[in-house]
Each structure stands twice: as C-alpha cells, then as structure tokens.
Image 1 (cartoon, protein in one colour):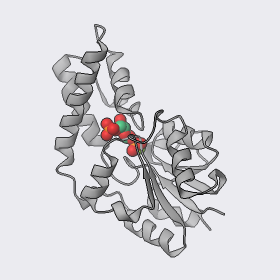
Image 2 (cartoon, protein in one colour):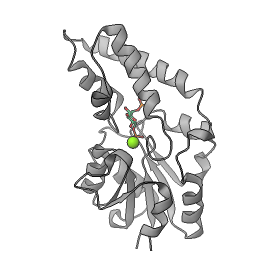
Image 3 (cartoon, protein in one colour):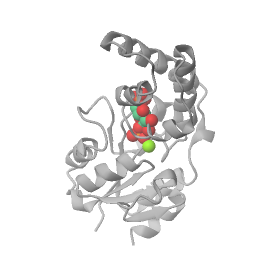
Image 4 (cartoon, helix red, strand yellow):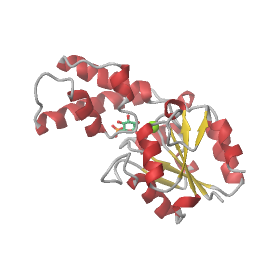
Length: 211
Ligand code: G16
Ligand code: MG
C-alpha cells in the first residue's frame, strides 16, 4: 500500500511556470539569445544552472563560468521579484482538498522539488506545515532526472520507495521517480510520458489512485 505521496512543487502544487518563463525571457532578451515556449518546455523540473545551459545552446558565443553564475543570479532576482506577487490564487486546483484527504487517510505528504526557492514559495502560500518533509534544490547534488530528490524524501520519511507515489508535471521528474523505484503519476505537461504509470488532469483525481 502507498504510505506517502511526494509532490513536485512547480507545476503540481503551484503554477510558477509562467514566472520562470518570464524571468528567463527577460534575461535572454538582454543577452540577445533566442528563447521561446518550446525551449522553455525543456526547462521544466531542471535545475537553474542546467536550465541556463539549455538556453545558452542558442547563444552565438561561449559564456564563461563566471558569466553563467551572473546570468543565473540575474534570472533568480527577476524570478523572486515575480514571486513577491504570488498568492493563494496561484495554488493549483485540488491542492488543499487532496492534502486534507491524505491526512485523513494517514498518508504522509512530502515536497520533492528541484527549486532552491521551494521553501520561500511554500511559506508565501502558507502551506509549509501541510507537508511532513520538504526536500528541494538546496538539499541535493544532482537534479531530476536523477532520483536523488525523491530518494532523499523517502529516506527522511522512513518510507520504502515502493510505497511512495510521485506526482510530477515534468518528463525529467517522471524519469526520476522511475529511477527511484516509485510509482509515477503524471499531471499536465507530463501526461503522455511513456514512463508515467498514471495520468491525471488535476489533483482532484489523486485520492482515487490510492484506493
Ligand atoms: C523547478 C522548475 C524548473 C526550475 C527549477 C529550479 O522545479 O520546474 O523550471 O528551473 O525548479 O528552480 P530555482 O531556480 O527556483 O532553483 P520543480 O522540481 O519544483 O518543478
Ligand atoms: Mg515541476
């Protein structure tokens, strides 16, 4: 039986996609690097520095490590400015009901996010306390599709990987869940991933998967 659900953050709990996109777009424009929604789709669930690497594939010149650090910092400042405007309205449908239902059933809830801003976002939304464990980009060495974030969450929960369900909106996250030997549930853009064991349109459909 499933004893814990590990939720990705961006795209599963909260819709920060557009804010990441906007922040990367403003950096790309300043640098004169082509960037669009198709490239943005490849950044979902990927760490900040790896995301920058993907964007710089379109650049006309090489960027030094120092320049990369500076660009990533600029993107993050821009992103954090956009995060200042985040409210409960940015919570994705079904979050509160689903967390309450898990609690009723004694199933634990965790966050497994690549983002280093995860705790900031959760606290702005006032839902930090709704999760038993939070593992984010600050706690790991290797980002999705590496299973580290989910393996760490399960270990901290004291849960066997096979008893954990992972909800993900990114292909990289679904792959990470599979590599962690957990049950992958795809939502939104990850639907259609051949690795996803279940596909849901919103979190409202999650409790039914646990029966
Ligand atoms: C998220 C987003 C990614 C983002 C990454 C790092 O991961 O999906 O687009 O690049 O976090 O974010 P930050 O720059 O805030 O550290 P997740 O795993 O929550 O979907
Ligand atoms: Mg995500």
